[in-house]
Structures are given as C-alpha cells and as structure tokens.
Image (cartoon, rainbow over all chains, first blue to last red; front, top):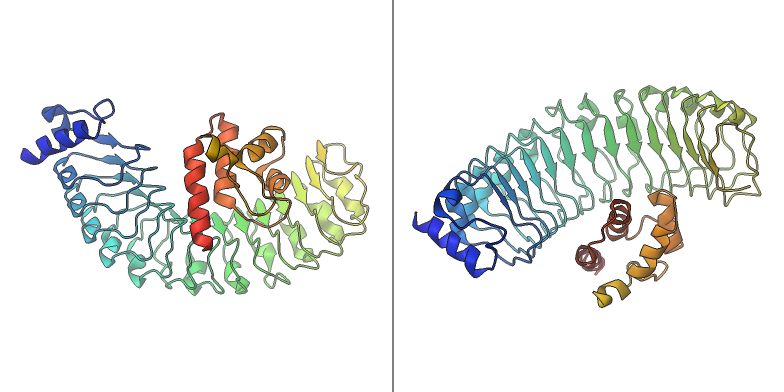
Length: 330
Length: 79
C-alpha cells in the first residue's frame, strides 16, 4: 500500500494529476498507464506497485533507464517505450513473461540483457534505431514472433536462429551492416515481408525459398546483379531494388505474375527486359535515374500501370499507355 | 518552436524543417520522390526525421518536438 501511495504522491509532485489518477483504489486496479510525451526523465521505483497494469505507454519522454521494479509488473502485455534515451534495460525485464508487444524503437540500446530472451510470448518486437551490435543466440526462444523490426542498428551478423520462428511474417533488417544472411532465414515459412535495404548483402540465394514473400526490399545494397532465381518468389507484389549498381534486370522477373510495384531507380540499367509487358498486374514502375535510352515496346501491354517514373535517363518519352495516370516526363 | 522550425533537417539539401514542411505540403508525390525534393539526392538519408515529418503532414498535425528529437538522434548516430 505504501508504494501505491508513494506513486500517487509522485504523480501529484510531477504535475501529472490531470493525466494519471491519484486515487489509491483506482491506482491499485489500473490497467493502462499512459505517460506518453510528458518530458519525463525518470520513473519512480514505486511504479512497481501498479501490479494490475497490462499496458504501459512511455514513448516520447527522456528516460535514460527503466527502474528494476518494472519486473514486478508481471501482467504487462504491451510496453510502448519509443523515442526515449534508454542506454540499457534492467535485468528484471525478463520477468515480464506476459509481454506480447514491446516497442523500444529510437533509444540508445547497445546490448540486450540475457534475461530479455525470457520474453517468450512476444509476438511483436520493434527495436529499430538503437545501437545494437549483436544479438544473443537465445533470440531463438522468441518463437512466437510475428513481427520483428531491427532496422537502423549496427548489426554485422545475426545468430542463425530463425528456423523455429514459423509464424514470423514481417522481418525488417534494413540499415544495418549485414553482408550475409543466416541460413535459417530461408526456413521462415510464413515470411511475407523482408526488408534488407541499406546493408551490403550479397548472399541472395538464401531468398529463393521464400515463395510466400509479398514484399522484398533490396535497395541500397551495392548489388551488381540478382544472382538468384527471382521467379521463385511467385507471390511477390512489391520489389524494391533502388540505389544499387544493376546494369540489367533478369528476364525471369517477367514471371512474377503478381508483381504490382517494381522499383529500380538510381541503378545503372542500360535496358529493361522486353518481356516486362508480361507483368499484367503492374501498377507502378520506377526506373528513374538510370542509363536507359529506350523503353520496351511491350510496356504498352501493361493495362494496370498507373504510375511511371522514367526521368533522368536519356531523353525517354512518355509511352502511350491508356491506364497511365502519372508519368514524370511528357 | 521557431528554433525547431529553423533547424536543418538534413545535411543533403540543407533545408530547414519549415522549408521541408512547405515542400511536402506542396507535393502529391509519394515519400520516396517527395524526399528528393528536400534533399536533392537519391540516397536514403535522414530517413527517420524526414519520413516522420512527411507522415505528420499526411495526418495533418506536426509535432515539432518529436522532429527535433529525431534530428538529435540522427546527428548523434552520425558522430
């Protein structure tokens, strides 16, 4: 009881009484605590007394750490702690085994404590824009993950732990320092979105088994060619290859019967496959900023095409495609 | 608030936050293309503050403090 009273005093002392209840009985049963964007620099230890919390929203503050007592909030299912200044997590975070959703985007985390991998019920984990350099092989324990975002960190390699993550459908590894992908990536059977932008990945054959992929982003990887059979990705709808060093696209790209968005801007493309007109579902084609002198005549067969970006090539003219709503040249 | 609006949002293009707001508000282009109007380059630079600003304009409310925070965060990563 004393800790709850202490928390009520902290609320009043911090001038938060208009946002957070101070009645003791209400606090005892409080399920959702929203402290978003309140310029908080620290949380009191007595927050651990709010044992009925299921949702804790802390995003947009100036928190440098979370109190060890947070480990007492074992009913928590959702923590939102985006855009703070966290440099580490308390070991006690591993006690929050009911957590399903955890958002730590935009902090300053360099490592995660080993206890973190006790959070085996997580389905949605976002730790983008931190300073992580490595992850523990214990990541394998988070086998219920559906959504994992690790973009904008300093990861040079990943532990080879993805095989048990059968349900993972979204994986964002963009803007790290990866040069290869662990073999188990190819065993994520349900993967629908794979974002690898801004790395230096050359190990593309690992992608061939992802026949469920709907969205693949390989932009900004210094790729000189696509050295895998892209036609294996038969469900693919969105393919991004911008900012690479590609001089051509493989003919097999024309077999992606479901492709709706194809983007290969800022490469060194000298020509496009003549069969590109086979992509009957294509809605948007972006080949701006390449080395193209002509467009395939078959583009006029793209009856679904609405947006076409062809500027910054060699004097290309807008093709006659009845469905076209936008083209960046006349 | 004024200082936040006058702050450079990206070294590429050297546009201020308020200039970026004007550019984003004046275009119907998607983020990837609208971003080039601000930075003048094809790189994926300054992604978090620029994309956040673009999305805020789409939703109709700009949180300048959050943009300020994201610029700080970006600059610290580059140091």
